[in-house]
Length: 538
Image (cartoon, rainbow, N blue to C red; front, side, top):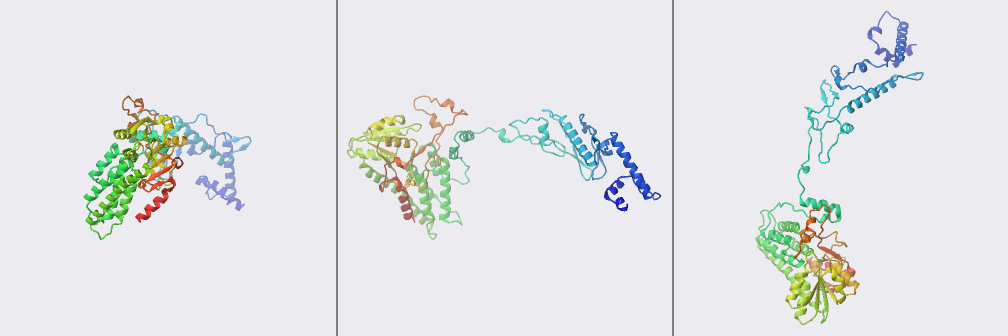
């Protein structure tokens, strides 16, 4: 009996009773137990009658807090759920306290949802209804909370696509909508072109170049050269490379070593900055990259004991030697190519190549009589420049667009092409359309000779025009020499992407031989030439 009396369950029930009814000294243990049993029986009878067994706290709506005193909620914030009932009996059995607590919790959640659903967000109303939920702090202070995103979604709030509504809780319970700056600023023409190219041709998106602000001062000669590159005044791999070397000679002449810095190290960094600036104006050609690489190698190998004057004199010699190397290579290629042109031949060329024009004019000057067919294509129409140069020398020429190349190829005896670069895998990078002419020549069993100097050889390897290429100006596709362009009204169309690629890649199996200053070589000999050039530099 003593063990049952001291059981924790009984002790918990006794603690819930009033002190006046428990600790009376004139009552025996039997009387206390009898009185407790009577109260339990009365409590069970009250539950059966539908009292609900709710605590005084639940009936009155009071809320106890762990801080100082009790805090009452606003009576307006309590919304009753009309269809919520608490059933305390299931059949013949009686529910326990845990089941009753669970039902009370479900009832409170239902009332909370009913309260939220009764509220609506009115657009344009500056004095919107605030949330009635409260939180208790130890010191008795009350802080109102902003509605959660889930609650806003349940209330049916609609948020516009162009506006991002950020609700921030502040001490004065104010909400501030935040609109990003990008929603109010119009997109530039470059940004619109980026969006188009990412949507229609994402494999060319990396070719878009961005003009970055300059962090250092640029030499006036470099600024002028970059403008000429961008405007197309200086074109051609050899012409651009020679112009670069001449301008770099002027830059080195005006260069003054900063205090507490080394000549070779600072000049090498300056050359890197110049190459990055010119690349932002127009992507550097392979010949220009090789020239800068060659120049920087010599700059880094200048002895530290030399004075600035001695170092500059040495760099002048290096630049002059490189320019003479390009000119001598063109002369050597002309000598090798003359043996492939005979009287009565019909030579087909494509676009404009300075070395090809030089070969044809020299062959005509030594008495060879032949015909030339110039194949051209839009938008640059560079074949017109070749046609003018050859007609001025008295050569018999024909001019046709690339759409008629298959018809003109029937009468040809040899195809002579220029090159922008020759890759390590033997592929030829040249003006867009060159691969089509080479493919037609192979179809008609015509020999294809590519004229390329060794300073254009590259150790890069790729087989498609996506990896390395250049995007020309869109205005070039819209301009026509005599008539109105039908594409002009469609320039601003959101469903049209104008892609002006400058180069294409010709496979090695379409090329018969490559004419260089070292002789006539197969395309597969590029790695050998590069290895020999590297050993000569070292």
